[in-house]
Amino acid sequence: MAPKAPKWRELADRFGEQIRNGDYEPGQQLPQIRELVEAGEGAKETVHRAYKTLEAEGLVTMTRGHGTVVRPKSPLKRLGIARYDKAKWRDGDEVAFIADRVASGRAYSRNEQTQSVSRVKAPAAVAEAHGLPEGADVYARARLVKEGAQPTHTLTSYYRPEHVEGTRIVDPTPGPAGRGGGFRVLYDAGYEIDHMREELFARVPTTEEAQLLQLSPGEWVVELHRTTYTADGTVVEFAVGVHAASRFAWSYDFKVPDSAATEGVSK
Image (cartoon, helix red, strand yellow):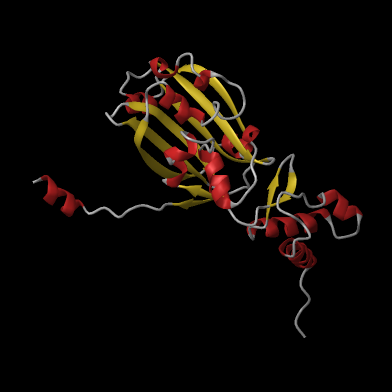
């Protein structure tokens, strides 16, 4: 006869099955550890170990002050190129984070993006991207994006004051900067975006980032650097995003280049 599984394993298996069966929905909180202890499910250490096991299996997220919450069934699609399709924001109101939600088949609300706007001294990376001296004045538009109650990522865009002064980009009202968001504001101001470069870095989060994004212990983040240009090469935005690594699946769909063919045409 096989040895009986320890109590913590039995408890983890039971909750795991309920989560997989849909008895607990994504975003729903599991019973507090204290409640299970009082119900006779085991000692505090036993229940805590069971929940930590569920977290290690990717089924829940444990955060101080928020309890143990069931994770989404699948990560959000973080579109690469398609999220910036001009038709989405120029002709409609599908800003980038909303484009990701639509592609993922997930609900969204415009006020799931909050923001603060301030005029700051440009850090080195921002100054370099904009071709400014370090410490020059720039506008920083910092956003925290959530899916329901769960934060997914932060994004801070830096702009030259002469590009955005007096526009909705410097309005701290929660949500995108009006219909079509920041790219539409730049377009209306005569700065139509043409191309961009994105760089990604995986790293351990800072303590502040872990708290802000409600990350599980040991969870990493993906840092994004986005430089956005007009057709003549003017940088109109440099953005830094910090994404909870487990909450996104990065998706890219692009035409495969053939530089040899291009060189042949130009000769």
